[in-house]
Image 1 (cartoon, rainbow, N blue to C red):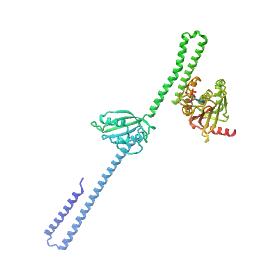
Image 2: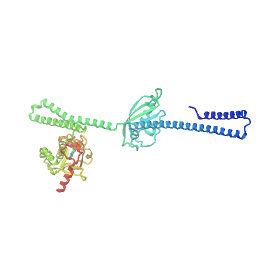
Image 3: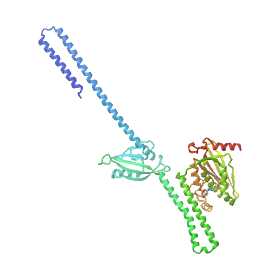
Length: 457
Ligand code: ADP
């Protein structure tokens, strides 16, 4: 592409040459020309030539200006494209599920995504060195080993919360891999942090559960095999005792059956395999049915059952599952009651009408304050021996808790040792229209029906 300067120079040289030729030719061809006329002609010709040269110069400058503007524009476009690519990469790295820390060959932090900041408790503070990220020697060692040896490393690390407390401690799995921009050298380290706190917790719970299950099964199983052995080694001759032994075997077999069915039930509810069939029905009638089924049990213990749920009170729930909840609670209320005690079931509306509260109250032994927060845990019993003697599996309240949650509700307990306990199930008074069968009107407020009834009484 021609540049402006040589062109301009050539034009000026050309103009000067033309003027010199004109002057020389004039002097030779018209030696007697009036000097004034000659001066005029020279001035006109020179002016014309200068104007032409100026025009040319201006045009050249304009062209140059246009070219540089064009170059500037394409540079700007390239820069925007690079910035967009960088932002895109940053947002991709930010949206990956794990925490990402990338360091250079000098071990300085080149990039850290928001998940890594959250997992390592770093807020928005500036990070430059690895020490700014964590003081955990294991993390430093992992990054250093990858940089030094060029091999991948996988390790478990524990990260404290932002304030350095152990309380909000997270367990992380760190995968560190070398970053290679070409084959010859290691240019840095890519560290990925995955939060495995919940996973480890679940694994612990699973282990505990298995230990508890095998322990719970072992006791009746040992008892069965001991009595069978006794019967086989001559016990059968002793008719009176052999009947007693067989009854014990039967009781233990029933306990095992109850345990296995409760475990299956609980795991089905927990895994979400249980589908609720919501319907609207009168609660009082369901309580009557529950009490009827438990009748023989309470005659034995001389416990009085009182259904104080009004006829107008309707609930929206899975009938079979609510029956299971009430049976478990009422059964406990009978089992842990005193002779001539009472079990009362009532229902009321929450203040804001959003929930219906079903209460199961007893006049029994009560639950000590320090045991209260744990009674909904699987296999937790206040008095293990008593619970087993009464045929309990230790899973009843855990099933109640999960079923209440499956309904979008919850269960709570208050108790006073020696006076009695009260378990309250809170169920939503209204449910989403699409989760109900068509014959149920979602605008029906169970809570308001209960509230109306309470007012009427
Ligand atoms: P269990 O099969 O032993 O009844 P649950 O899960 O139903 O198991 O209850 C757990 C424990 O909570 C019981 O063993 C008992 O110690 C305590 N508990 C439950 N309900 C009552 C109650 N109404 N009164 C006193 N203690 C209770």
